[in-house]
Length: 267
Image (cartoon, rainbow, N blue to C red):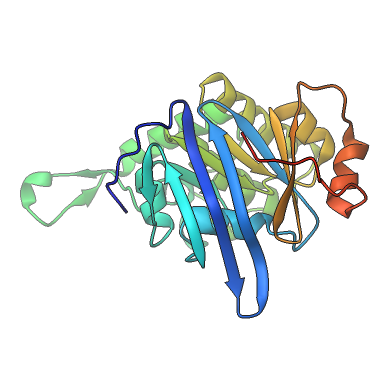
């Protein structure tokens, strides 16, 4: 991660300049210029294969970009993997969830940041299970996620419960930026409502969020702006507070019925 400090970022938490990803001859992402302000919630929408998840993978270091610049919290960054991104303050719920099936809920919430005791033993540590279980219960209560038995392993949970554990893990730790990639795609009505309440909690706490979603109702209810991707490019930047556009307009950008010729940047 670069230590180059940029002094003109103001209230911007994340910016990408010319972010591009090619897979051989396939241009999955091309010249994505994007700005997210502190405390702002932005939705990324687009058809399948439009470049939404590719964009997230470049920001979080899951993949290495072909070219372009990522500036996070005033520094130019080049994360080598999701762990580096998380250490810098980016918490992400990926579509794959990234949960350890053979571990229980506390072990998954604290995976990679386990609480330990007896630090005076030098390199040897003992996990503080009691503290992790207590913090897990507090985290689930804070986020409104209901898990009947937190000692149950992930592999024995329903798809909805697994998704909620992944989201609770992300929302439980204070972060500079939260990214959710289709967090409610496989959830029922009640579980979807829980996730949306988590998003609202993050908004009240002033934590910025990027939400990748196909759910039009959800997007209009939860975010400040909508960024539309089409064929690997950003084609629209729509302010929710501007009542001159509707869900039909968003669909028009997604399908290409509107070309986004008036789009001049994301600011």
